[in-house]
Length: 299
Image (cartoon, rainbow, N blue to C red; front, side):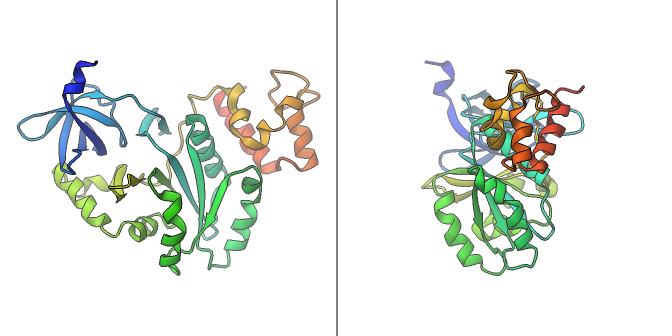
C-alpha cells in the first residue's frame, strides 16, 4: 500500500499556472499548489492532497487511465486526463476544418479514448455541405450525432442524454461552432460553477482561458470538460510509422502495401494510394495523412 493512500482524495477541476482547484468528494473546492516546482496535474486527475492554512498541497497524482496532449508554439503539454470520450463539435456555418477534426480523432485514437462528432446548426443552409463532409467519417465507423442547439435546445438535451450519461467527456470545437451554447444548454448552472472555480483561485476573470470541469450529474458521474479555443493537438508523441494505424480508413488497407515499412508516399505497390484511386480513401484524408506524417518525420 502506498503511503499516499492515507491522504485525502480529490479531483482536479481547473488549473491556472501553478494553482489547481481540487474538489473534495463532498463537493468543496479549494486552491491547491503542487509539492515542489513541477505542476504536472491536469483537469480530470485524481490526486492525493494535504490541507494547508488556506488550501492544500498536491502530494501525489493517482495513476491515469489516459492523457491527452495539446501543442502550443513551443512544446507539447498534457491538458486533460481520465476521459471516457472526446466530443468534437462541428458545424457548416462556419464550415469546420477537416484537418482539425482529423487531428482530434487521431489524438483520441492514440490515447485509446472513444470519440463522438456532434454536428450543430442542422437548421442552417450550410448543414447539407457539412453532412456531406462527414460521410467518410461515418463510413469508417466514427459516431456522428446531429443537433440544433439554438433552435431546438430541448431536443438536443434529449439526444445527448444517453451519449453523455455516466461519462467524462472532453468537449472540443472551433470558435463559432456553438461550444458555449452547448455548455450552457447542458449545464444550466455553468456560470455558478465557473464562479466557484474563480473564487477558489482568487483570480476573478483569469480562469476563462483555462480548461474546466462541469458536472452534468454528480451522482451518475456525468461531466463535461471544456477547453478554450480549439486545441491544436500534440501529436508529436506518435511514431510516424504508427500514424496510418490511428486513421481507420488507412488502417483498413495498409496490409495491402508491398513493403511493410511503406510510407504511402511514392513506394510502388502502395495499398493506401491504390485505395485513394479506388475511392475507398478520400483525397482529402490522404492529404491530411501526408501533412501530419511530414510534421512527425520531415523529409
